[in-house]
Length: 130
Image 1 (spheres, one colour):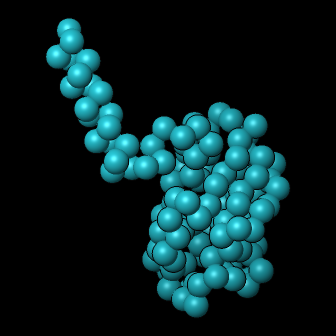
Image 2 (cartoon, rainbow, N blue to C red):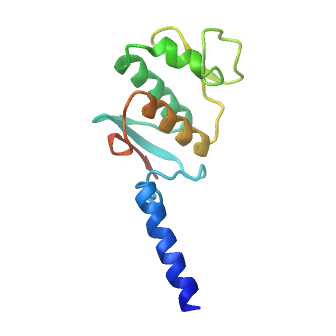
């Protein structure tokens, strides 16, 4: 039994070394908690839904990245120029539409993918939950 517990502790330490934010409650959205805010690159945004979170992420990418269209075309299930393509969407400031029909877990995953593409790390953004 002690050997099993030691092995579990060692594996946990390995995982935490590989994925530093693994286990942090505010970053690991289970989809059932409601988001309160998202901070990206020091910019704080109060939100009330996961749709707000993904919309704020899209707006940040537009303002931060010089190659938004390239990112958007690489993620066709998230971005479109056709307002009828997604069941639920929001129009972004540059005329593109962002799909907002995702669970909290999926929104968290999409944010991580988006921010990684533009060079942000887990320390550069945070979703706070109620």
